[in-house]
Length: 108
Length: 117
Image (cartoon, rainbow over all chains, first blue to last red; front, side, top):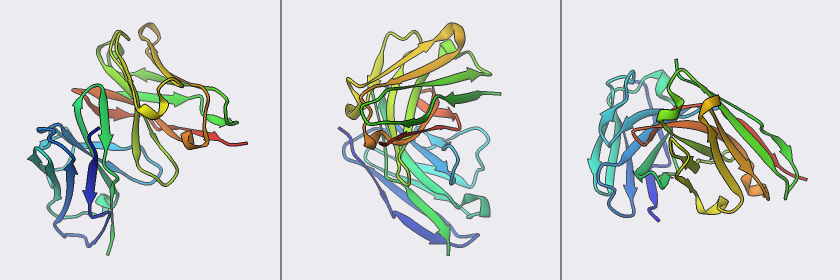
């Protein structure tokens, strides 16, 4: 099975900061990677799919990059609404999805 | 507007059964794979199962194989998860999600399942 890791597990940042979260897969997943944002008590929200494609309606300050086993989610200028937990997910087939453990972005 | 509304959660004893439902609206339900994803209290997300548009393919995470069954009724725009032999570790919020181009592009609000004596 493909395992996903994320770093850091927690990130403290200020409004306006550039934030980068890293996700690594235990084997190559090409570009089959998604990023989700989740706020407390709410359902996750899709941000990025196919490693770098921005979901419709998601602000352009969010971007994704990478392929193979290493991926990044970048928030170019952190906004108050962005304090949340972020999860990566591999989806190289319909038969198996694996989420990373999450990265919590909180206020510095 | 795409809407997914889960129901059926609650408190159940270990070894018991529960059936979750997800009512879909705002899109052509029969055209999409659908998934169940769960989140234990204070923990991360775990994909549980999914089902193809016509129900001909179903996949499960190893930890629920043989105990959970995913199904759908396209005439009723509904997704189901039959959960048997429930364990304490199945305690979680269960989300229904639409699989658009494989990723989960829309999610319901979730329903809480608590397995406890």
